[in-house]
Image 1: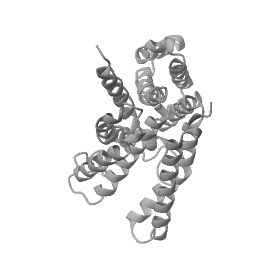
Image 2: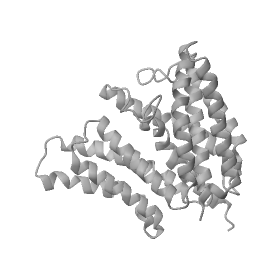
Image 3: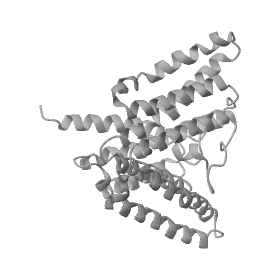
Length: 307
Protein backbone atom coordinates (compact mmCIF):
# COMPACT_ATOMS: atom_id res chain seq x y z
CA UNK A 1 0.00 0.00 0.00
CA UNK A 2 1.23 3.47 -0.89
CA UNK A 3 -1.33 5.57 0.98
CA UNK A 4 -2.46 8.84 -0.50
CA UNK A 5 0.76 9.31 -2.48
CA UNK A 6 -0.96 7.56 -5.38
CA UNK A 7 -4.14 9.63 -5.10
CA UNK A 8 -4.02 12.52 -7.63
CA UNK A 9 -6.77 14.35 -5.74
CA UNK A 10 -4.71 14.36 -2.54
CA UNK A 11 -1.56 15.47 -4.33
CA UNK A 12 -3.39 18.27 -6.15
CA UNK A 13 -4.93 19.49 -2.89
CA UNK A 14 -1.57 19.40 -1.11
CA UNK A 15 0.09 21.32 -3.94
CA UNK A 16 -2.73 23.89 -3.99
CA UNK A 17 -2.65 24.50 -0.22
CA UNK A 18 1.14 24.58 0.16
CA UNK A 19 1.56 26.73 -2.96
CA UNK A 20 -1.05 29.20 -1.69
CA UNK A 21 0.68 29.34 1.68
CA UNK A 22 4.01 30.23 0.09
CA UNK A 23 2.43 32.96 -2.05
CA UNK A 24 0.61 34.44 0.95
CA UNK A 25 3.75 34.14 3.09
CA UNK A 26 5.76 36.08 0.50
CA UNK A 27 3.10 38.80 0.40
CA UNK A 28 2.95 39.13 4.20
CA UNK A 29 6.75 39.01 4.47
CA UNK A 30 7.11 41.97 2.13
CA UNK A 31 4.61 44.05 4.14
CA UNK A 32 5.37 42.63 7.62
CA UNK A 33 6.58 46.00 8.94
CA UNK A 34 3.64 48.01 7.64
CA UNK A 35 1.17 47.24 10.45
CA UNK A 36 0.49 44.79 13.31
CA UNK A 37 -1.99 42.91 11.10
CA UNK A 38 0.70 42.11 8.53
CA UNK A 39 3.12 41.18 11.32
CA UNK A 40 0.59 38.82 12.91
CA UNK A 41 -0.24 37.28 9.54
CA UNK A 42 3.44 36.69 8.79
CA UNK A 43 3.94 35.01 12.18
CA UNK A 44 1.04 32.66 11.55
CA UNK A 45 2.09 31.82 8.01
CA UNK A 46 5.65 31.05 9.12
CA UNK A 47 4.34 28.29 11.31
CA UNK A 48 2.03 27.00 8.58
CA UNK A 49 4.87 26.81 6.05
CA UNK A 50 6.72 24.61 8.51
CA UNK A 51 3.86 22.35 9.60
CA UNK A 52 1.76 21.98 6.42
CA UNK A 53 4.18 19.74 4.45
CA UNK A 54 4.68 17.55 7.54
CA UNK A 55 0.90 17.30 8.07
CA UNK A 56 0.26 16.34 4.43
CA UNK A 57 3.11 13.82 4.47
CA UNK A 58 1.82 12.14 7.65
CA UNK A 59 -1.72 11.72 6.32
CA UNK A 60 -0.38 10.38 3.02
CA UNK A 61 1.40 7.44 4.67
CA UNK A 62 -0.03 3.92 4.22
CA UNK A 63 -2.40 2.75 6.93
CA UNK A 64 -2.14 2.42 9.90
CA UNK A 65 0.52 5.19 10.03
CA UNK A 66 -1.98 8.09 9.88
CA UNK A 67 -3.67 6.50 12.92
CA UNK A 68 -0.28 6.21 14.65
CA UNK A 69 0.46 9.85 13.81
CA UNK A 70 -2.81 11.13 15.30
CA UNK A 71 -2.34 8.95 18.40
CA UNK A 72 1.15 10.36 19.00
CA UNK A 73 -0.16 13.90 18.48
CA UNK A 74 -2.88 13.22 21.06
CA UNK A 75 -0.36 11.93 23.60
CA UNK A 76 1.93 14.90 23.00
CA UNK A 77 -1.02 17.29 23.38
CA UNK A 78 -1.90 15.70 26.72
CA UNK A 79 1.72 16.10 27.80
CA UNK A 80 1.70 19.81 26.95
CA UNK A 81 -1.62 20.20 28.75
CA UNK A 82 -0.19 18.61 31.91
CA UNK A 83 2.81 20.92 31.69
CA UNK A 84 0.49 23.90 31.27
CA UNK A 85 -1.56 23.12 34.38
CA UNK A 86 1.50 22.26 36.45
CA UNK A 87 0.63 18.58 36.85
CA UNK A 88 3.40 16.99 34.82
CA UNK A 89 5.17 15.85 37.99
CA UNK A 90 2.14 13.76 39.00
CA UNK A 91 3.44 10.78 37.03
CA UNK A 92 0.75 8.30 38.06
CA UNK A 93 -2.00 10.42 36.53
CA UNK A 94 0.10 11.42 33.52
CA UNK A 95 1.07 7.88 32.60
CA UNK A 96 -2.46 6.58 33.12
CA UNK A 97 -3.64 9.21 30.61
CA UNK A 98 -0.98 8.17 28.09
CA UNK A 99 -1.84 4.47 28.47
CA UNK A 100 -5.53 5.11 27.85
CA UNK A 101 -4.84 7.27 24.77
CA UNK A 102 -2.63 4.54 23.32
CA UNK A 103 -5.45 2.14 24.17
CA UNK A 104 -7.87 4.24 22.11
CA UNK A 105 -5.49 4.01 19.17
CA UNK A 106 -5.43 0.23 19.46
CA UNK A 107 -9.23 0.07 19.78
CA UNK A 108 -9.59 2.05 16.55
CA UNK A 109 -7.04 -0.19 14.85
CA UNK A 110 -8.63 -3.45 16.05
CA UNK A 111 -12.36 -2.81 15.64
CA UNK A 112 -13.27 -5.95 17.62
CA UNK A 113 -13.05 -3.79 20.74
CA UNK A 114 -14.58 -0.60 19.35
CA UNK A 115 -17.54 -0.78 21.77
CA UNK A 116 -15.11 0.16 24.55
CA UNK A 117 -14.33 3.51 22.91
CA UNK A 118 -17.43 5.36 24.08
CA UNK A 119 -17.22 4.05 27.64
CA UNK A 120 -13.49 4.77 27.90
CA UNK A 121 -14.00 8.05 29.87
CA UNK A 122 -15.81 6.10 32.59
CA UNK A 123 -13.15 3.39 32.57
CA UNK A 124 -10.48 6.08 32.81
CA UNK A 125 -12.24 7.79 35.72
CA UNK A 126 -12.51 4.49 37.54
CA UNK A 127 -8.82 3.82 36.99
CA UNK A 128 -7.54 7.19 38.21
CA UNK A 129 -9.91 7.00 41.18
CA UNK A 130 -7.82 4.05 42.39
CA UNK A 131 -4.61 6.09 42.44
CA UNK A 132 -5.35 7.87 45.76
CA UNK A 133 -6.15 4.48 47.31
CA UNK A 134 -2.99 2.85 46.00
CA UNK A 135 -0.89 5.80 47.18
CA UNK A 136 -2.85 6.12 50.45
CA UNK A 137 -3.10 9.88 49.91
CA UNK A 138 -5.97 12.37 49.81
CA UNK A 139 -4.07 15.64 49.39
CA UNK A 140 -5.24 17.47 46.22
CA UNK A 141 -6.40 14.18 44.71
CA UNK A 142 -9.82 15.51 43.67
CA UNK A 143 -8.09 18.29 41.74
CA UNK A 144 -5.68 15.84 40.11
CA UNK A 145 -8.49 13.47 39.13
CA UNK A 146 -10.59 16.28 37.67
CA UNK A 147 -7.74 17.74 35.62
CA UNK A 148 -6.65 14.30 34.41
CA UNK A 149 -10.21 13.57 33.28
CA UNK A 150 -10.26 16.87 31.35
CA UNK A 151 -6.92 15.99 29.75
CA UNK A 152 -8.13 12.55 28.66
CA UNK A 153 -11.56 13.68 27.46
CA UNK A 154 -10.21 16.63 25.44
CA UNK A 155 -6.85 15.42 24.12
CA UNK A 156 -7.66 11.70 24.13
CA UNK A 157 -11.29 10.73 23.65
CA UNK A 158 -12.36 13.87 21.72
CA UNK A 159 -9.26 14.44 19.59
CA UNK A 160 -8.97 10.75 18.71
CA UNK A 161 -12.25 11.02 16.82
CA UNK A 162 -10.07 12.40 14.05
CA UNK A 163 -8.40 8.98 14.04
CA UNK A 164 -11.83 7.36 13.83
CA UNK A 165 -12.55 9.52 10.79
CA UNK A 166 -9.22 8.46 9.24
CA UNK A 167 -10.36 4.82 9.55
CA UNK A 168 -13.31 5.50 7.21
CA UNK A 169 -12.81 4.87 3.48
CA UNK A 170 -11.41 8.13 2.15
CA UNK A 171 -10.89 9.26 5.74
CA UNK A 172 -7.51 10.90 5.14
CA UNK A 173 -9.12 13.40 2.78
CA UNK A 174 -12.02 13.86 5.20
CA UNK A 175 -9.66 14.76 8.07
CA UNK A 176 -7.74 17.09 5.77
CA UNK A 177 -11.03 18.72 4.74
CA UNK A 178 -12.14 19.31 8.33
CA UNK A 179 -8.77 20.61 9.48
CA UNK A 180 -8.53 23.10 6.61
CA UNK A 181 -12.06 24.34 7.37
CA UNK A 182 -11.32 24.86 11.05
CA UNK A 183 -8.01 26.62 10.41
CA UNK A 184 -9.51 28.99 7.84
CA UNK A 185 -12.50 29.64 10.10
CA UNK A 186 -10.27 30.52 13.05
CA UNK A 187 -7.98 32.82 11.09
CA UNK A 188 -10.87 34.64 9.38
CA UNK A 189 -12.55 35.11 12.76
CA UNK A 190 -9.39 36.57 14.29
CA UNK A 191 -8.66 38.82 11.31
CA UNK A 192 -12.16 40.32 11.11
CA UNK A 193 -12.43 40.54 14.90
CA UNK A 194 -9.64 43.14 14.87
CA UNK A 195 -12.21 45.52 13.36
CA UNK A 196 -15.23 44.23 15.27
CA UNK A 197 -16.89 45.83 18.28
CA UNK A 198 -19.30 43.27 19.75
CA UNK A 199 -17.30 40.98 22.03
CA UNK A 200 -19.66 38.39 23.57
CA UNK A 201 -16.77 36.65 25.35
CA UNK A 202 -14.76 39.72 26.34
CA UNK A 203 -13.88 38.28 29.77
CA UNK A 204 -12.50 35.15 28.13
CA UNK A 205 -10.98 36.26 24.81
CA UNK A 206 -10.57 39.65 23.16
CA UNK A 207 -9.76 37.96 19.85
CA UNK A 208 -13.36 36.88 19.14
CA UNK A 209 -16.12 39.28 18.11
CA UNK A 210 -19.60 38.67 16.75
CA UNK A 211 -18.57 40.27 13.46
CA UNK A 212 -15.59 37.90 13.23
CA UNK A 213 -17.74 34.85 13.96
CA UNK A 214 -20.27 35.81 11.28
CA UNK A 215 -17.53 36.45 8.70
CA UNK A 216 -15.87 33.14 9.61
CA UNK A 217 -19.18 31.30 9.18
CA UNK A 218 -19.73 32.78 5.72
CA UNK A 219 -16.18 32.06 4.52
CA UNK A 220 -16.15 28.57 6.04
CA UNK A 221 -19.48 27.61 4.42
CA UNK A 222 -18.21 28.89 1.08
CA UNK A 223 -15.00 26.92 1.44
CA UNK A 224 -16.91 23.80 2.56
CA UNK A 225 -18.95 23.96 -0.64
CA UNK A 226 -15.93 24.66 -2.85
CA UNK A 227 -13.85 21.80 -1.42
CA UNK A 228 -16.65 19.24 -0.97
CA UNK A 229 -14.89 17.03 -3.53
CA UNK A 230 -12.61 15.95 -0.67
CA UNK A 231 -15.50 14.19 1.07
CA UNK A 232 -15.83 10.42 0.54
CA UNK A 233 -18.06 9.35 -2.39
CA UNK A 234 -21.71 9.67 -1.49
CA UNK A 235 -20.96 12.19 1.25
CA UNK A 236 -20.69 15.33 -0.86
CA UNK A 237 -24.09 16.49 0.40
CA UNK A 238 -22.70 16.63 3.93
CA UNK A 239 -20.66 19.74 3.24
CA UNK A 240 -23.24 21.94 4.99
CA UNK A 241 -22.83 20.00 8.23
CA UNK A 242 -19.04 20.12 7.91
CA UNK A 243 -19.03 23.88 7.43
CA UNK A 244 -21.37 24.53 10.35
CA UNK A 245 -19.49 22.21 12.71
CA UNK A 246 -16.11 23.70 11.78
CA UNK A 247 -17.27 27.32 12.11
CA UNK A 248 -19.39 26.99 15.26
CA UNK A 249 -17.84 24.21 17.33
CA UNK A 250 -14.31 25.17 16.32
CA UNK A 251 -14.81 28.42 18.25
CA UNK A 252 -15.97 26.48 21.31
CA UNK A 253 -12.73 24.54 21.57
CA UNK A 254 -10.62 27.69 21.26
CA UNK A 255 -12.69 29.52 23.86
CA UNK A 256 -12.65 26.63 26.35
CA UNK A 257 -8.84 26.51 26.22
CA UNK A 258 -8.84 30.28 26.68
CA UNK A 259 -10.91 29.80 29.84
CA UNK A 260 -8.30 27.37 31.22
CA UNK A 261 -5.39 29.60 30.26
CA UNK A 262 -6.98 32.75 31.65
CA UNK A 263 -7.81 30.97 34.89
CA UNK A 264 -4.18 29.85 35.16
CA UNK A 265 -2.85 33.25 34.14
CA UNK A 266 -0.81 32.02 31.18
CA UNK A 267 -0.84 32.84 27.47
CA UNK A 268 0.83 29.96 25.62
CA UNK A 269 1.88 26.55 26.84
CA UNK A 270 5.22 26.55 25.08
CA UNK A 271 6.90 26.84 21.73
CA UNK A 272 5.76 24.23 19.26
CA UNK A 273 6.76 25.61 15.89
CA UNK A 274 8.19 28.80 14.46
CA UNK A 275 5.64 31.58 14.62
CA UNK A 276 2.41 31.99 16.55
CA UNK A 277 1.06 29.66 19.19
CA UNK A 278 1.73 26.13 20.35
CA UNK A 279 0.34 22.69 19.52
CA UNK A 280 -2.74 23.14 21.71
CA UNK A 281 -3.55 26.35 19.84
CA UNK A 282 -3.50 24.33 16.62
CA UNK A 283 -5.66 21.50 17.92
CA UNK A 284 -8.05 23.05 20.45
CA UNK A 285 -10.61 23.70 17.73
CA UNK A 286 -10.85 19.97 17.03
CA UNK A 287 -11.84 18.79 20.51
CA UNK A 288 -15.49 19.50 19.68
CA UNK A 289 -15.32 19.40 15.89
CA UNK A 290 -13.96 15.82 15.82
CA UNK A 291 -16.69 14.03 17.80
CA UNK A 292 -19.52 16.28 16.55
CA UNK A 293 -18.74 15.67 12.90
CA UNK A 294 -17.95 11.97 13.37
CA UNK A 295 -21.34 11.15 14.88
CA UNK A 296 -23.24 13.38 12.47
CA UNK A 297 -21.37 11.76 9.56
CA UNK A 298 -22.26 8.26 10.77
CA UNK A 299 -25.88 9.26 11.45
CA UNK A 300 -26.37 10.83 8.02
CA UNK A 301 -24.90 7.77 6.32
CA UNK A 302 -27.25 5.51 8.25
CA UNK A 303 -30.21 7.59 7.06
CA UNK A 304 -29.17 6.80 3.48
CA UNK A 305 -29.21 3.03 4.03
CA UNK A 306 -32.15 1.19 2.39
CA UNK A 307 -34.81 -0.19 4.73
